[in-house]
Length: 351
Image 1 (cartoon, rainbow, N blue to C red):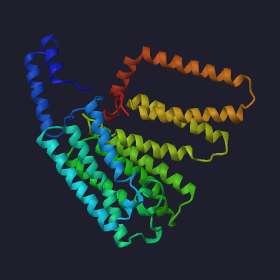
Image 2: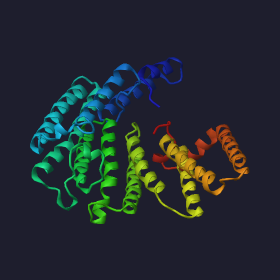
Image 3: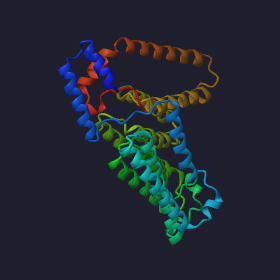
Image 4: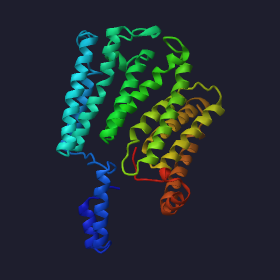
């Protein structure tokens, strides 16, 4: 939970902490910020922050997702030069705002834009040199956001590398969104490499997505464990879940046991959401449970009069479990605090 220096001084005035403790605490926080570990100014839902984020997303989209065919016809060499020019300009501007003006949010967003130029630069190099190999020429820049092809791997690797380098000097969480987005695409584009063909079969794509998603989630948990002050893992949790949950949901189990296990897995995601205080796990888990209940209503109990009533009783039981948890929330939090590793202990509700 973030607190301002004003809040801490008010606590000292109220006698909660002593003046000496306040001075030591503020000195510690200032030194902590100097080491690059303290949280930058948090994004708020006000006009300035909305405009900053909207502008950054517009620029990122303009140079990729929403680029036109005429833009692609500039040729590989021109596209790479354009990407480098954009990255340099936004990188310099971001550095100035971050270090020179102490404007961390707009500065960090400009650095994120610079990172997002990496796939365009690599695309231009590949287009110029014709380095597509057996996976075939993927087409235009905007095709990167539509088609699954092994040739995109190099663009995604470059994006991840650029993001990691940027995070080394600019500890801004939104940069992780660019990295996580590239990793999510990589989870799909790796399938042709494993299958050895230009177009991997659906089952191969599904399995690669599941295992790659698990790997990204493992990285997210490690980041959680090592980042005590800021939520750098938000986007990793989100895109890791998209890859893992999407691959699991796309499985074609023909048995009711397999579908019931799928439901239990989604229940497990909700349990993890409670433990980690990560809303994303609850959202995906709830969707999965709804899909399973829809299957029961449409197939297993299609014409059963008792199914709606039974399902209502289950819903009431879930609400009752929520009330029971609310009554014992403090005791549960104490137990988790005592038995879970530091990186897995409940935190304020996030992703």
